[in-house]
Amino acid sequence: MSVPVRIQNPGRKIWFDEMPEKLSEAADDYDITSDASWNDLDILSTHTEYEGLEVFAESGAIAGEDLTAPGVVHVTLNYGSKSDEGFATSESFPAIVHFTADPEKKTVEIVSLEIDTSSFYGDGDGDSPDIDDTSSA
Image (tube, rainbow, N blue to C red; front, side, top):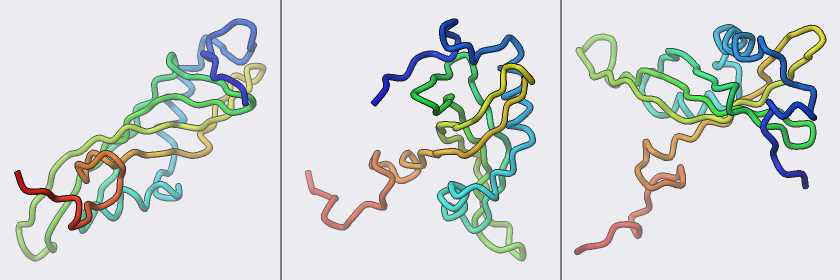
């Protein structure tokens, strides 16, 4: 197993100056609803709306052949039906963005996301709390 190294490490020859901008453009173009991780967001409300994806290329890392960068997914969680007023709230969830980069062509493509929705559940592990998880003081 290889240890992650910052992408900006000159010995890796994967970094190019335009990478942050190209990764940001790839995030703008990425169809998150086709990603397997969308289900993790979609189940959080009656109607989850995707608002955007921020990716921090400067903090990216390479481990073996895998390129990753931290990111944040922004959504609006809507509750209730369209016939009533309902309730909407904006939420943001941390993500790991997996991507490919071609420094010769100066292109970047997002491959997949890992989205951490555990903060929604308040228990830190992403699972719904069990009845046994509650304790009296």
